[in-house]
Image (cartoon, rainbow, N blue to C red):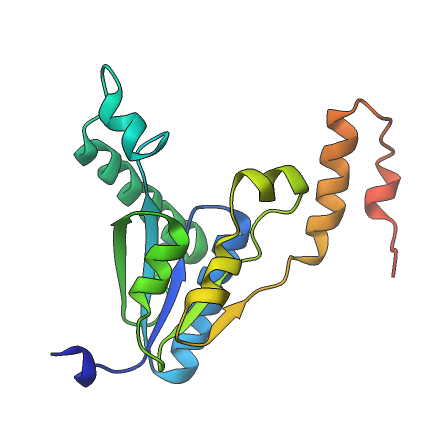
Length: 179
């Protein structure tokens, strides 16, 4: 079946992070609602990038790195859906490359839907690791559904900061209703 003959597809990238698992669950719901196929993508690159991998004294074989990415994809599917699966026709794709580019290239048509998680917050992390969601929003030709952060993510990040900085933490702060 050629690209022009295929039905609608919903593409979601996974990394195993809570945000990517939320995006995967939402993508499955969107696929179910629209009668679409679900494509679950995990992108991988050699540690340090291709140049560092080629120039390393004892680099891991790329087959091993690809196999590890495939295992992480299966683990993400299992974490998100368990043995029941997503409830829609789906395919898992292991793609060598950066996550944003892999997702955009997997959803090349205007009738595809690309679902991305919120990614990590924090200035240092954003500086070191470019935003996959931002890349997809600026480069995709199809609609992109970018999920907002979970309501508890801000509170959890605050707890992590306090722990890292050895600041006192009162457990009652975590259970109080702050509405």
